[in-house]
Structures are given as C-alpha cells and as structure tokens.
Amino acid sequence: MSNVRAAITGIEAYLPEYVLTNDELSTLVDTNDEWITSRVGINTRRILKEDGLGVSYMAEKAIEKLVKSKNLDPKEVDLVICATVTPDMVFPATANIISDKCGFINAWGFDLNAGCSGFIFSFETVRTFIESGRYKKAILVTGERLSSVTDYTDRQTCTLFGDGAVAMLIEPTSDMNLGLLDSILHVDGIGRKFLYQPAGGSSHPANTDTVNKHMHFIKQDGKTVFRYAVSRMADVSVELMEKHNLSAGDIAYLVPHQANLRIIKATGSRMGLTDDKILVNIEKYGNVGGTSIPLVLCEFKDKFKKGDTLVFTAFGAGFTWGAELYRWAI
Ligand code: UT7
Image (cartoon, rainbow, N blue to C red; front, side, top):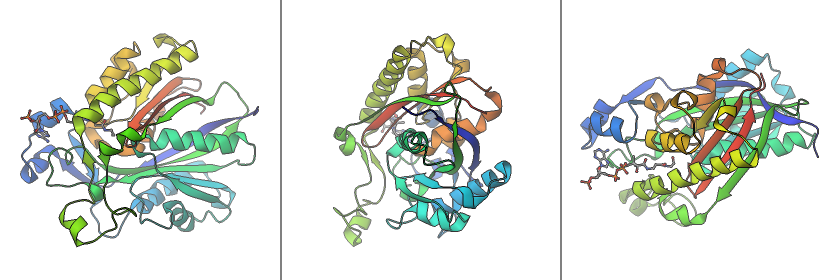
C-alpha cells in the first residue's frame, strides 16, 4: 500500500490561434451552423495551421507556461508521459522530443495512445509511478493535432475535431484524501471498426493508394460510437459513484470528455447531476481527443477549491473508456 497519492499541482494549456468556425466549415462541405450546434454543441475549434509543427510544438508552449508558473527546474523532472494519437511522427515518441525541447535531461518517458481516453489512461499510469515512491515530479502532457488527420471533405467528421495541448505537473501528496483516489478503466477491441485511422501503421503503410483513398484520416461510424459512448460513460461513472457511496450531492463537478454535448448531458443526467455541476467547453474547442478533459480542468481551475470531488469520464477509439475519482489538491 502506498502512503502517497498522485496530485495535479500545476496545469497550463496552449491553444493555437486560428479559430475555425461553423460558417467556414459550411464553405468546405454541405453542413451548417444549426446542424452542428444542435447535434454536437460546437461553435468553433482551434487549428494549428503552420506546416511542420506537431504536438511537441503545442506541448512545449504549454510546458513553458507550467515551468514559469511553478518556478520548476526542468532538471528535477523525472518522468514525462505524452498522451496523444497524433504524435509528431511514428517514432521516436513525442515524449522524447518534448524532453529534448524542454530540458528534461533527468527524465525518461513514453507516449501513450488511448484515443479520447488518453488523459484518464495516462493519469492512472502516472499514478502508479508516483505511488511507487520512485518518482516525485512527473510531467503529464496531453496534446492532439487532430486537424492533421481530419478529412475536410467528409462532413460526418470534419466538424468535430480541434487541436491543443495541456501540461500538468503531477507530484505526490501525503494527504490521502486528495489527488487521484480511484480509476475504473476498460478496453474493448470491438470498437476498432467504428473509430480509427486505417493507414500509416504497419498493416497499411503509406503509399499512393492509401493517400488516394483518404485512409490517413479519421473514419467514424458516428451513430454506433454515440450509442456506445452514452451507455459506457454513464455506466462506469455510476459504478464509480456506487463503489465509493457517493451521491450527486457529494460531487462538486463532472469533468467529461467533450465529444458531443448530448453525450455529456446524458452522462450527467444518469449520475443525477444538475447542469451547473457539469463542466463544458466543447462549444469553443470541439473534440480535442484525450486533451479535452485537461482543457476543461485548466479552464475552470480557479473555480475549484481544495478538496472538491471531481469525476472524470471519457470514451474513445479502441474502444477505451473509464471514470476516475479525483480530489482537487491545490
Ligand atoms: O471522441 C471519441 C468518441 N466520439 C464520439 O463520442 C462521437 C459520437 N458520435 C456523435 O457525436 C454523433 O454521432 C455525430 C455528431 C458524429 C453525428 O450526429 P448524429 O446525430 O448521430 O447524426 P447521424 O450520423 O445520425 O446523421 C444524421 C443526419 C444524416 O442525414 P440523413 O441520413 O438523416 O439524411 C447525415 O447525413 O445528418 C447528416 N449529417 C450532417 N448534416 C449536416 C451528418 N453530418 C452532417 C453535417 N452537417 N456535418
């Protein structure tokens, strides 16, 4: 049994400047603002436009802010985990590139690919390192350049995704009532047919055929993913509440993955939460994959009080899904 918990002690975000509006999208495909806002809840998303820049660029910008706000010596960082499905390149890991750019010369680390569950899966991973007692200052960075794998000729997917990165400092706390208290996480490979990027890996390496067939872009059977997401996120969040004897009144805020406002509302409602306890920023940033939950945490951090009970829940490609019980520690 560990005598420490893993706590987020600093969090900063970077969002690219370019704002992609529903009106601009309606010049690219047959869509409109009314459909997107009523079916999904998105008004705008941020897009990293510049060629040659990837997740490590946005991660570096977020980490620069974190280093400054925490007065952190990069040499003290001992672990770097980057959750992403849009790494700078297939290898080396984006965590390596970030470590080099940010001067984490005493750290080791790796990338973690869990689709839109990237944050909750990587936080559970960091937790085990911190609770082992061997690691004291971990950087957990989530970043996606989903615009790089979005097909702007496909109206089923191109309205959904955005770019951004969030950097978190994770440290041990000896207060056992704070930090990451529990996680319930799942994978089910049945989902691989419904949300995926077909080419670019070893089964379909890049060639002119894969490019011509748009196989390097996100493919999603939206209806099927919607059905699974609604039931799995709600079920696992309720399971977490029951396991810890929590009623809706015990939860300060639900911090859900931001894929669709209707999924978010359905999850909150199954948990018995009123709208004021369900944190949302999908209207501004769209679906930023595993970066969505940290983006919400960063945006609302001044609202949280030390000891506030938060529930994180996500669903993503794989399928991957889960829920986490967290007590705000700063
Ligand atoms: O983050 C990882 C997990 N991902 C998710 O959780 C996403 C889950 N899925 C969803 O959020 C929703 O399924 C979508 C937002 C992707 C789609 O919404 P929907 O309400 O499920 O729409 P649909 O796919 O059932 O399509 C309804 C209609 C269709 O037209 P018909 O066949 O009824 O004539 C589509 O062709 O809406 C049409 N449609 C559009 N119309 C205007 C689909 N996309 C668009 C569009 N603009 N962009």
